[in-house]
Image 1: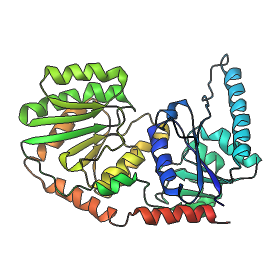
Image 2: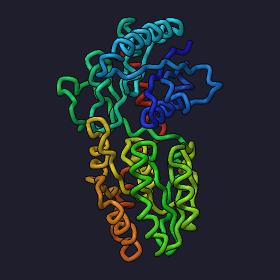
Image 3: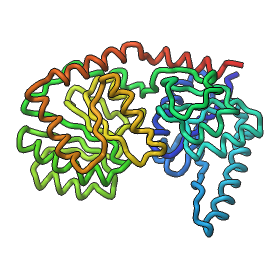
Length: 357
């Protein structure tokens, strides 16, 4: 009889995408259930009977709202406790975020096994909170900032969790000619900055080359961007979330991205050249350290968010038309990293962590 396990995830894409990938890894070996909050529910199929919304609101410093938020939080613990009991869950895998707190607290009360997942190079606060109780924590590196030395023994190293489709989308060519296609992702995090400050770069490039842009955005900025691209006669595609984003990876020449762990790992896996612009207001500045990790491996460029970003981006991208040496060095560095990354290897490591006593 299959064991029942629960994957608990926060509401952002950075939490949900790894949770969905974990689900694909484990669904044949276990009965897998999923929980997220209202924000995360939009990423899941409506007909998935194993998905449950357990909504959690972050605590606030507003003294008038605090009692209400605390009451909701304790109700979420009660709801989580009831859910875990009713589904006879044996193991919890938490991908982090404050939404995971009620689930993990309930798991501790019920004495269930808890496995944490930390994709970033800075330990998340909810994961730090539960390090003492968890049986292990799945990480991409041992060099994680803020990680207590006494819990290092709990680290289980795995290769980055990638969506299965990404393994089949590796680029085999990259021609920077007079016609290029640029992908811009990370629009849901710090979207306003990307929409306002990348226009100048795009406009200057469109004068120099035949340009096409795939641009991730949100509903608030969609009409403004549509007007910009049509006014300047630039070929474009706007999207919010694409399940198979890299389906036609060979058609894309370059990517401008934030520095979420999943996004960077997937770009490296498919060998798509990219520049990372870390979101400076991410908790504990984890995006900066995610980008820095790949920059040190010579896999990418990194530009910090500042007032000169349009000029810096244009100079970087346009330089590839004159000298491709740096571009080719980055691609070769990515190729050296990705050859060991396989779905089956990761699959076995995750299953072994669950089955460990």
